[in-house]
Length: 251
Length: 191
Image (cartoon, rainbow over all chains, first blue to last red; front, side, top):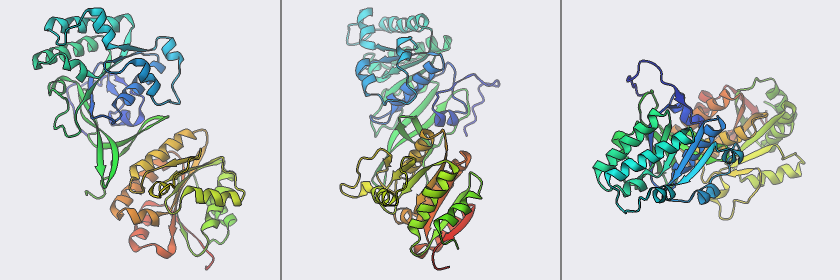
């Protein structure tokens, strides 16, 4: 277990609702944290983040999914039919899907590359959305696609810092989805996001004797002690399930 | 040594939930053991059965259970062998496939899913058989797998029954089973 002694008082938790992950985090994500969920394609990032939001909505916490690359309609069609999912969550506005291209369009952010001013406009718009909808849980899928339009490290740093501050001051717990290549030796495409986020959860595909296992590892999480071991996960209608990766006597 | 399915069921009924049993099967008592568990013990205790097949494909066991006229509605299979056979994995409502017997974590995950899916009732989990898992995995990873899975099942008040085919069990297997199980029960015709 990794001792994190930043806070002498136990911080309030935002339980993800995924039992295995909440156990790893000793009860859940410290409320208001901005977490980078990072991994290559097919590792379960989007599915896990959606489950986080569904559990939030079921617990009466308004939850928002901002989809950058895929349309929300397509996304909800392809999502695993969870046993615990209720259509009424969307109808009641507890679970909200917004497409980032629509936000860009409404804000007039049409340039391929955003300026620092555009970054401010975008962060303010997301903050306003969180206020208007009383959002307590938010996912941006993916932050990599947003960063693609920021180009420079300075603007990416500015964006992540500002979005993190905007969300945490509103008590909103957030997952920023980051896409990396399977062979990447860092946790984000630009290397900036990982340094600023409050937590990093690394998801991967691990090959062992020809078998491909989906894995999850909490690398960093401010405000709580947590396991740093690697776990194997399965995406099931009962949600994401986790078990420890077997080590086979250290082999 | 127990000789009949009814006697096996009676012996199991005496045990509290959370028990982990090493069931040593010798001679031609394999189907007696299955009958004793799924046809007598489980219904009497109102348990759902989660049956992990490694030795033979689930459809072979299902065929036998049908011949024996055993109710299949509360028996769920985690089939670890059919995917390794060409065209072996046939779709069946109560069968969940693991690609390979080497994917031990995925066996645990499928069992965990089925425990949740059948959460209204308690479970008995049958692992058939440790010898077959030993063909594909070394004793270190197998011990770790059993230790973690059986402890998880204990925490959920489930009965765990691990088959050991006595004729082919190695000393390593017997030592490992002694470490992870609470009790040995033998069934056979030669005692």
